[in-house]
Image (cartoon, rainbow, N blue to C red):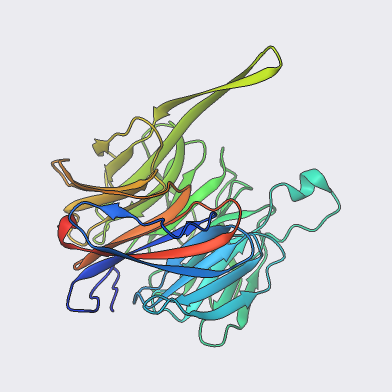
Length: 371
C-alpha cells in the first residue's frame, strides 16, 4: 500500500480501498463504521493502558502512530495490525504525533495543563521529542514550551519542525541541529493546530480563540490572518498546490445554572463549520455548515476538487468549489480528536473517542463511494 502526500494509494485483495482508524475507550467488538455503498472491515489493536490522545499515519500508509495518556507512543503495522514498536520517554500525556514525509522519524509533544494547578512544584514535561522509527531511539529532545504541546508538524523536507502549545506560542525548530529557529509572539489563545505550507515558506496556526494565521516560516513574522475570531479552530489543512486553506471551527457555548440542588447544562452550537479560504488573498470562498458538533479534521483531495471533514460520528465529503455534498460515512462512535487524508484510491480517517482505555480500531473502507 502506498500513500503519497496526497493520501492513500492502493490496497489489497483486488479492491481499491481506504483505511479508517478509530480509537475507542470502550471495548465494543461490534463497533463497526457504517458507510452507504462501501465495504467495511475492522481490526482491533490493544496496547495502550490509558486513552489515546494523538494519531497519525506515515506517508506511505504502512505505519500508524498513537500517543496516549500512558506517556507512550506506539507504532503499528497498518495491514496486519501488529504492534511494531513502543516509544518511551515522555513524562506526561502525549498530545501530538506526526511522521516525517520519508517515514523515518516521528515527532511528538505533550504535557499536562493540570500539573501546575495540582502541584506547583511538580515537573511538567512539555517537551517536543523526535524518534527514529527503525530503532525506536529518541534522537532529539526540544525544550521551549512552558506548558503542554498541543500540535506538531514536520516541514515537507524534514529539516524543520513546528510546534504549537497551550502557552499560546508556535515555535519552529531545526530538526537536525535541535535548536529553536523562531517563535511567534504570545497569541490570545492556545495554538491548537500547526501546519507547514507545501512550499515550506509559511506556517499556519489555529488557536482556540478562533484565530487562523499564516506566518513566515523562517522568521515567524505574521503574514496574514484569515477572517475574524469565531470559535475554536479545531482543524486545518492546506491544498497540495498551496492555493487553498481549509479550517474547521467548533464554537459551542456551554451555560450552566443551578435548579434546586441539580445543575443544568445548556449547550448552544454557534459555528460548527468547515471553511475554505484563498491562501493568497485571505478571502473566504466556501462555508460548509453543520448545526451541532464541529469538525475535528479536514483535508483536500490532491486536485482540490473535494473537501472531507471528520465530524462527530461521521465523515462528510463535499465537492469544491460548488459546495455540493459528495458523500457521508456514518461512524459507530463520535470522536473528539482525529485526522483525515485523501488519496487517488481512497480516503483515510482516524479519530479518538477513548475515555477509559486505549483500544485502537483500524477500519478499511472501500473507496468507490468517495469519488
